[in-house]
Length: 571
Ligand code: HC0
Ligand code: SF4
Image (cartoon, protein in one colour):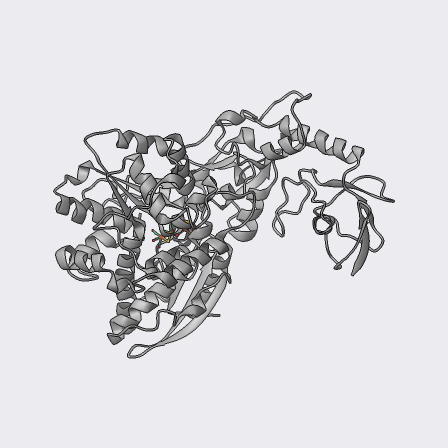
C-alpha cells in the first residue's frame, strides 16, 4: 500500500493506483475528457492536471501513479486556470454549433464546458473542415474532432482493425482514416464502436430518420417495423425510464403512436434463424466431409464483413443462414404480403437495430430475394428511434403497454438472448438437441456459453449426434485471435458464435451512449432474465414460426427457405 494525501485527506491505496483513481476514492473526482480506463490513458486532453508538492510542473492524473508520501492538490486556482485554458484551446478547434449537433445534451465536451463554467471564448475558433461522407453508415465530422484518440484506441486495441490514425503534424495534427483513405475504401466493419466511444459528435451513425418519416407520410405504403432483441433493454435509457417502465410493450405502443401500420419483432425471425441454422449445423455435423470447419454464425454483419476481408479462406465456414433482420425483410415481402393481400413493392420495411453495420447489411446487393426490391428498406439505430419518438412528441413513459402485431410478432426466450454474447449458440443448441433427440433439453443446460467472458469454450453431448465442441467470442480482436488459432490448428471447434461488438449486440454501435460507461453486460443480463421468464424458451416451439413453415415455407432448408432465407455471402 502507498500512503498519500489528496486535498488534505490522508489515504492508503494499492501500488500502481493512478492519481485519478486515488482522487476518485478520496471523493474528489478529477475532470477528464479523453480518459477511458484501460483503453485511453494518454492525457491527450490535459483536463486532469493537478499539482503535486515537490514537482516542477503540473502533472496529469490519468497516467501518473501515486508514490509513498505524495501530496496532491486537485483544485487550486492555478489548476483551475490551467484546465480552463486547455479546454478553451480544445474549443478553439471545435465547431460548437451545439444546437444542431446530434450529441447535444449527451456530449462530454459540452458537459465539461458547462461544469467548468466556461461561457466565453477568448481564442479565435478555427475548426478543421472536411467533406462529410454519407455513403457509409459511420460518419466523421472533422470540425467536431477533439483528437482525444478514443476511436483510434478502441479500433486498435479492442477491434484490432486499425481504421483510424493520427495524421498531419503540429497544429494540423488530426485523426482521420488511416493511410488517408475514404472509410468506404477500407475494411471497416461499421461496427460503430468508435462512435459509441467518441465523446463528441465527431463520429456518428448516419441519420436515416428522414426516409422513415417520408414513408410514414406516403398513403400508398404499408409501413412494417421490426425491433431487434437488444433494443428492448436499451431504448428507454435516453428517456430516463426505469427498466420496469421502459418495457418492450411501451416501445411497441410508442411506435404505433408514430403511425407504423405493423409493429413486429425480430425475435420472430431469430427463432426462424435457429430453425434454419440449427438444421444446417446438423446437416453439416452428420455429413462432416465436404464442409469447412468450424461452422460460424452469420447473423452479425460486422463479423461477416470482417471474415470476408481478413480471412477469406474461412468464409466457406459461415452458415448460409441470413441474419434475423434480413430473414424478416424477406418474409415480410413474401409470406406477409401474400397473407395480407398486399403488393410487396408497396411494403416499406424498417428495422430498429442496436447496430450501425446493419445499415450496410440491408444495402447488400444479395439482400433482395423476396420481390427484387431490398428486403429491408431502412435500418435505424436505437438512438435514431429515440430521436424519432422525441421529434414526434411521443412520451413513451405515459403510454399503456401494447403487444407486437401478429403474425411476425411472437418470439421465444431463445430468441431474445440473441442480443447477448452466447445467446445465439445457447438457442441453437436447445433446438439442435430437440431436432436430434425429439425431446427438449433443460433450457438451462448450456450455461457455459453465457456470461461476458470474451472467449468461451464448451463441449456438449447431444445424444445420437455426439460431442459438439463450441466456442463463443465477442469483439473483433478476440475474433481475430480465434480464427488465427483455428488456422494454425491450435484449436478445433464444430460451431463458433462471433459477435463483432464486445458483449454482443447489447453493446452495439447503435445503442444509447453514456460517456464511455459500458452497459453491454447489464443490458445482456436483462435479456437473459427475459428468457428465464418467457413462457416458451425453445425456438422450435414458436407457434408463429410453426405456422410459417406449415402455411408457406414447407420445411427448414427447403426450396423456399433456401431462396428467401439463405445467402452464399458473395455480395
Ligand atoms: Fe442483433 Fe440479431 S441479435 S444481430 O445483435 O442474430 O443488430 O439485438 O437484431 O439480425 O435477432 C443486432 C440484436 C439483431 C439479427 C437478431 C441476430
Ligand atoms: Fe451489429 Fe450486433 Fe454485430 Fe455489433 S455485434 S456489429 S451490434 S450485429
